[in-house]
Length: 327
Picture 1 (cartoon, one colour):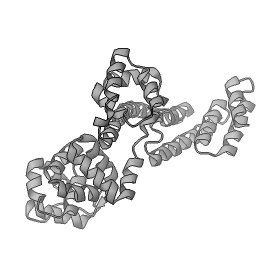
Picture 2 (cartoon, rainbow, N blue to C red; picture 1 turned 135 degrees about the horizontal axis):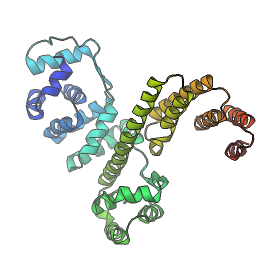
Picture 3 (tube, rainbow, N blue to C red; picture 1 turned 45 degrees about the horizontal axis):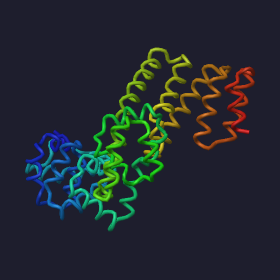
Picture 4 (cartoon, helix red, strand yellow; picture 1 turned 90 degrees about the horizontal axis):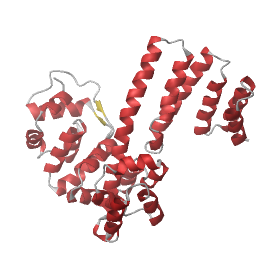
């Protein structure tokens, strides 16, 4: 059993007893190696004065080295690991910090995030930057917002709506039944009772709920597309389908993680390139690639592909409209 497996095998309460007297850096390393729900149990057992440095240390981590894992193994078991931790353990500390923020809305976590905002603004901003702007919920269709808000408690929704301006509030509330909207508006009249940190945390909770829904749809569509390519690797249409999965799904969270968005666009471009290699006379493929180039601000390439799509299919109005947008 390697160290990460050992950590994950522990009951969270027993694990806390093992590390509660260790440094905040070691506690953070252990928490990084845990699954989020169990990590939260361990984290919340620390007193507030310890939670603050532990949380900061978690957010700054991206890897636990093999030497650090060996030390943790000895702390937990009293002996060196039987299985080598040669590669260490890599995981985004900021993502872990976000998970902790999302899973708890208690007052201590609010104090932790306030402390981080005051004393390590750069790190705090790094976490906040990864949280999708709540106001961009207006980009969802009314039906999507209606379905989403029907699953959210009135008080929680009012708490999340405290910070956005009145125009955003009205837009977001316009899609829900009037009775529910009136209850939320009444709560907003006394919005001062909601703490700003509570409001931001509730916004993150709602956004994460949407992200989880989209993740499920994305994973299923991607699995299906991968299987189609595995069964028929020389079918250009299969690559276009997977490219459109990369581009279409998770579009609402395009700004949630810039690195992830860039990676998906690169994967989509690689798939479209392969489709064009397999079927170089298909106008739609150039139209799709033109869209990818627009997303990545490569306007000359987008225009060239738009022209090629029209050359191959001169009567297609959609392609003509796309070129007019680029001119």
